[in-house]
Length: 157
Picture (tube, rainbow, N blue to C red):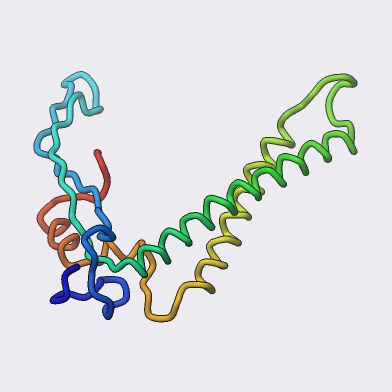
């Protein structure tokens, strides 16, 4: 635990190295192009991690929000698939005896999207006042400094 610097996300609790949030970064060093096509042939890059200081409390808040999002997507997707199958059965679309998975697939995708949106809103409501979302890691000065020097967030181009 580092008592000198506070957590980036709440700006009050002492940071905990175990709770720090890594941000994958990459820097393109060279791109070779195929002269016959306008598509890159080979990209060479370096990788690094910027560590954003975080306390254990903010880590648990971010993990809770992440699990809400995953759970909402899964539940919404399952409900959407069931709804799509129910639509298929109720309206007997397609040839008799055939199974058309389109309503189930569309229902699953729509349901997952709605579930993700609802769980995001629940996460916003439940996040304690004064705690920045996990996405604020890209606003940390170390990450911004790397971006200003040509680094980009992510594992690879």
